[in-house]
Length: 85
Length: 155
Image (cartoon, rainbow over all chains, first blue to last red; front, side, top):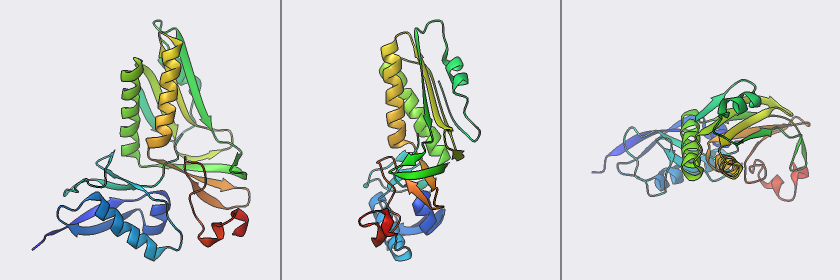
């Protein structure tokens, strides 16, 4: 039996406008960033007619790669295209 | 070396004073300000928001990279958050170094990396009352579905 883990995810800018500032995503234990992103992209698509820009994902304040494995307690954030400066 | 996100008007000359050092032969100051037009639209102001803990971590990493690459430790970066009006400064970067080349290279490195990496977002306010998230790749983030095919007059 595969255990599942609930990850709390922070969202910003257009992603926050669509899904809210935080969401909980339930994924199988050992899931990767790519699976999280696919889940959230599906949710965004169902909630908004607006096409959202493809975001990066940050884990513990660093940009994560698609194959990064998510662990319990990780601080996860969806980072839409940035615009500082 | 110091980095900060602030919610009050920036004082760029104070940053210049902060990096001053008798061992430095050159100081540079970069100030980014709110421009009145973007992508042909008349802008009245910008809301800046951040994922603050990561933005600060990323700013610190960029400052450390610049220090390692160019050998400058007199470096300050401040970015303002909140609602800014036309002409107000959103970012100020001050660097001093023994030599001007390194100071200028370090400053260029910091602003380019900052714009590409630091999780800060801006929502522009336009004269017509509309607002849109804008990204550093150039244009407005797709905000309107099919109406956006062609140009902004389709909305």
